[in-house]
Image (cartoon, rainbow, N blue to C red):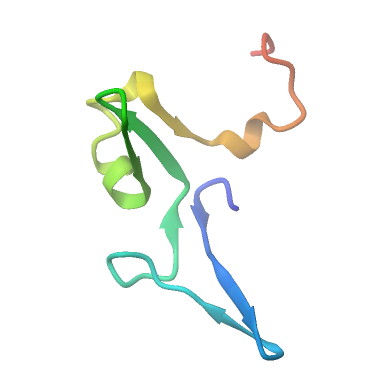
Length: 72
């Protein structure tokens, strides 16, 4: 998991295959969005609608690892 993008690989038979996302790319924006209470949107689609759903979009989460909840 990266701060900006993530890549997923699958270890099979002694080698790694890099998986492609739903739009055929090997990198996916590290963005998760919760819409309408039960819909989860990830990657480029979440990044594209980040401004409209700012309160329910998570990005740069890796920067929060090791910090306290109330830290700024």
